[in-house]
Image (cartoon, rainbow, N blue to C red; front, side, top):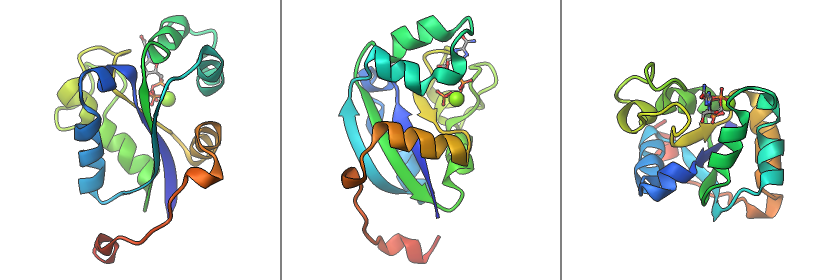
Length: 147
Ligand code: RTP
Ligand code: MG
């Protein structure tokens, strides 16, 4: 069983798409383990997006991600890291296929609604940055018998 860090970005919160995004992840069969509405400080943005420091899109990305509340989540399930990336769609808005979250709702590469960890290492790192152990809820869902 894997865990991943997913986050509705400020554009998704402002556009009222938290429910739509959570709905897609639930219907795929993943289980929510932790969630909170929060603001990302510039300090937290710098840690979270450390891999992009120095790139031309870094400064506007930090400005965007700190511009309003985000909905931070940890989801669990079999292969949830790769499968949730597939549900999200490609980063480049021209490559995000309709049917994916970005393909259906995003028309800009920066304002692309959702963040998702891209590897087991980044999932572990990002979960540790955003959540404390006591924020997780462990429970059984009947649907797990079928997926
Ligand atoms: P994320 O980290 O948010 O899940 O997105 P990702 O893996 O699909 O994309 P990544 O390459 O990690 O980029 C992080 C975020 O930076 C913004 N971005 N802007 N060329 C650009 O203007 C550009 N490239 C990336 C996007 O918000 C992207 O999700
Ligand atoms: Mg990324």
